[in-house]
Amino acid sequence: MLGINGPEFILLLIIGVLVIGPSRLPEYTQKLANLVKEVRRMASGAREQIKEEVGIDIDEVDWKKYDPRQYDPRRIIKDALLDDDTKPVSAGAPVAAAAAAGAKPKAPARIIERLAEGEAAPFDTEAT
Image (cartoon, rainbow, N blue to C red; front, side):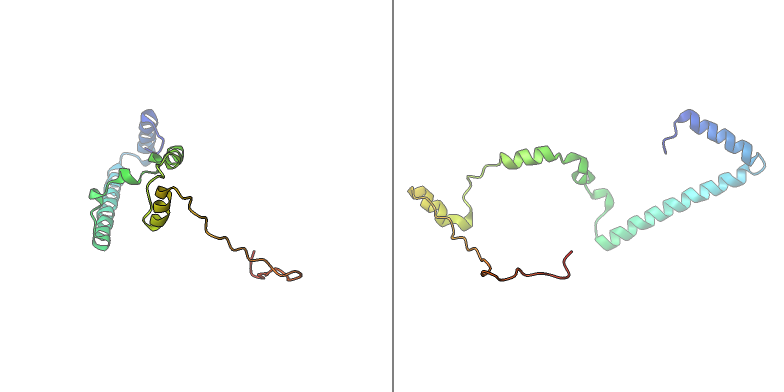
């Protein structure tokens, strides 16, 4: 609760009672109760508005699935590196058929475009 432990909270309550005084204490407790009721009403209104606009109930969402603490970058990288890459890709079916026949697949030709001798490289004046 805001980093305040039990004894500190009791001390703050005692100081508050002494500063406010016994004559005004019921008035301020009523104001505090009204504030808490208003905050609860606003929270339920926001929940209803989200439910209307998004179409899902907040209580039905599995929030653990979205917890960023569950994602360990080391585990994700390890899983990606150890992932089985021997699965044939549907677009590479001819490559898989050639590999099954014992032939090495040919690498696609790499096209390198070079500037003519003495030609200036393109320059973007708006680039930073």
